[in-house]
Amino acid sequence: MIGNILDNLRKIVPLVHCITNYVTVNDCANALLAIGGSPIMSDDIEDVRDITSICNALDINIGTLNTRTIGSMLESGKIANSLGHPCILDPVGAGASKLRTETAKKLIDGINFTVIRGNISEIKALALGAGAARGVDADAVDAVIEDNIDDAINFLRDFSKKTGSVIVVTGAIDLIVDENTAYAVRNGRPEMSRVCGTGCMLSAILPAFLCAADTPVSGALAAVCAMGLCGEMAFSENDGNSTYKTKIIDELYKLSGETLEKGAKYEVR
Image (cartoon, rainbow, N blue to C red; front, side, top):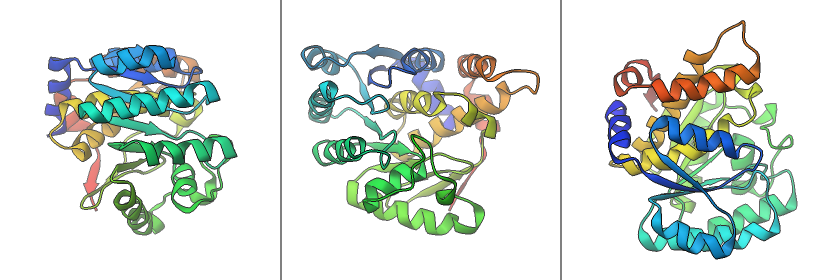
């Protein structure tokens, strides 16, 4: 099933508008190209009105948030909604500062996001109004583990009902949850957290997978499995984190639908 989504993605080559983190913008563009999509990076409000309209999907990432781009994010989201295009929010650092938290909430109130993807601390900050974010990273006290996975799914399901979005939480165990379905994904390597940008890259390729899938939850599942599997295949004890990042992008480029289907480790919860 999810292998077919990747094969379809490469046939349609979706054009994805990214308003994203300038720390990782080049990695996001390369990850999208590697997986078979086509990126456009644009964040000026006078530009995004045209760019969003010609694209197939939108990725909004608040990793390097500034007040200049908030209006661009809202404008792009409204245009994408009016065109029926998939819309992704990556609320990087929500809970770490007032600006990030309030901006993410404003975006959720103003835009119908197909998927909201973050770490568990960021999602808790948005759902509960408080969080234990450690900068832009999840706090260890929030970690999803085997002992609390069912409680985490129930919490995410409630947030999905509230927002109308598929909620994707990435960590040692990845969760993809909507009102009716929940998947736990166990692909990936802990060393991926030592590479700046793996989460941003996932958020960038997610819209491309959504364009190629029959349902948002299946598209999100395929994207999460693909990123984690490529993290596994790219890893070598002999490499540093910079080489590892490059190899992850290489594995996204080489990934086939058949390899994804065989290597995906997920279960319905």
